[in-house]
Image 1 (cartoon, rainbow, N blue to C red):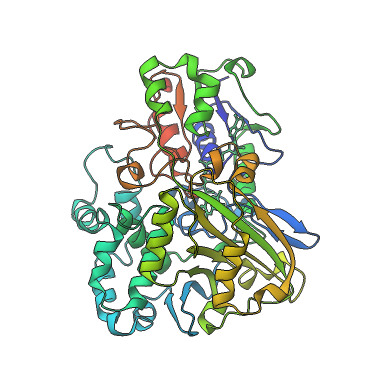
Image 2 (cartoon, helix red, strand yellow):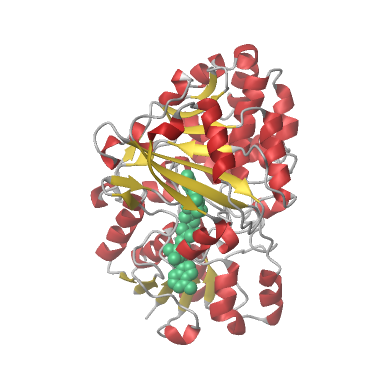
Length: 473
Ligand SMILES: Cc1cc2nc3c(=O)[nH]c(=O)nc-3n(C[C@H](O)[C@H](O)[C@H](O)COP(=O)(O)OP(=O)(O)OC[C@H]3O[C@@H](n4cnc5c(N)ncnc54)[C@H](O)[C@@H]3O)c2cc1C
């Protein structure tokens, strides 16, 4: 056997594909009954398909590695909602993230030209931006030095600093909501980078859903891998190296905790110790719904968006993330929500919908956030509770039971605060290497971090190809 991959999430599958494309024999072992990890789709109640984890896919649709694979041939179709994202206010108005910079700017009133000025140097340059930003930070000189330097000068800032360019609450709230995807207090360095990249992905690639559900992404990756001769075993939770066949390279699409459990005794003591010090971030509490009709948003813009952020103000969003990071449950949680059936009605019976919402809670929190989350939704969509046909509550512990990578309900597989967003899982020039020359980490615990984009898997596979097999891609 040439290579073994543990875990069939988007990164494990992408790593396996990169190895198989190079003519190597690859086998993948997956703990769950289905491939996909954070890109899966299940039935909530008969007729209603929902995504237990990832739902919206700016980084998937904008991934250069997915783009070069024949995923459409294997069933993947991106579908775009009319608006990538809306950021409603309780008065029924909304700031919006549109495909068009002009429409977005227009929704920001007095800050329209400040927004246009901020985005102008970057809009329309997504491939170069991904190349500049979504790569291992110490991988060598940037290929687009001017763009990298310009984005770097904004991206390193805390979102609370960059948003001072805006005078009014609408633009500040919109930007804070996008920066909040970084799952860290907005006073942390680099959170502005999340805000910029989420805004620019909205303009350049959209925030689409996968037709039929996020499982379609994983199924397309698995289908392509099998077409290259790769083999996937599901229902195989690996706990020791002895359970794996002998191979020249082992790639782990696991959390550092999983790598240490399975191969800790094969790593140099120093590497194992630094992996064990890996910092964890916030946890997530998620609710999924089957609804009797469309979401009753008071904002007409929210009704046509795929993703809706419920803050609404930058101050409230930052307070929510800061409170959770200090170990307390925020009374008014900042929520990321989505209504995939607006773009992809086939996931529910005619006229019905699926809807999801999640908020950040303290790491490993074991309380019940259902009431706080539903109260926040009702602020922007009064009467929403009356439409609920079925509800699935997913606590941090449930998230870990669903996927061992979500240790204690952390969905970013480690802290993304400050430099942890760049140097993952440890500060190392080649973050995919583990100190054992045949063992590599390929999960979102490595750069460029969380998201369904496969880039961690691609970079890890390139490292293994170069170091073990003497090949370059
Ligand atoms: C609730 C939630 C919402 C999210 N929303 C979005 C979103 O909207 N958009 C987006 O782009 N991203 C989103 N993400 C993040 C995204 O899902 C992940 O960043 C991405 O899936 C990471 O891919 P991965 O391959 O590194 O790991 P995973 O997708 O976690 O896959 C790891 C796989 O390895 C398997 N595994 C682990 N340990 C073992 C073992 N010992 N033996 C065998 N198999 C093992 C797991 O079962 C799993 O299938 C979300 C995540 C969650 C949990």
